[in-house]
Length: 179
Image (cartoon, rainbow, N blue to C red; front, side, top):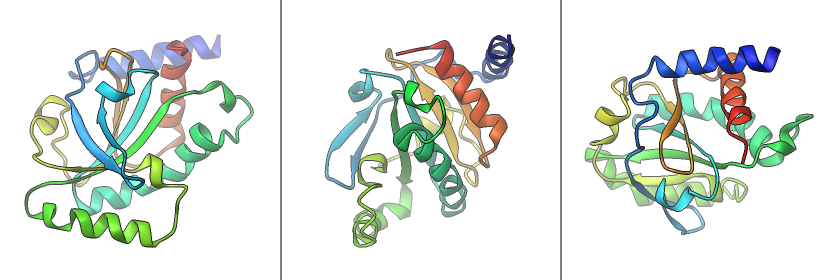
């Protein structure tokens, strides 16, 4: 019953955002292990979680999502976490004048020797449109998190700081769309 109520609540929250149910615009990027990936085209094998940031402040906030998401969806440290099989990417977006820092940032991350991060950081260099308008990412100081289905449609959207409540909403969406 709790799962049903959580799922229903998450569905109500999610449908209040205009982009839920709409296609996620193609976003090409490069991982630290030099794989080129286009979300959602190359991620249709399973549900995909992406966290996106396009300012220094939003990147710093997005880092707060990384550990709990990595523990749950990659390391699978929780009791039922082994049931979640998703693609998972954090996407720093290099746009405008920030494009010049793209290679430098990637090299700096590689130098940090955090090879566990390599497959999950997807660096984007390009324009902000259509992402800001289509995904309603108007507040550049905040990171945005999306769940995308196998057809490339947005199932869920959150923004801002990590919270247990948001993680419960994510779990409810994942539970209602098993792989």
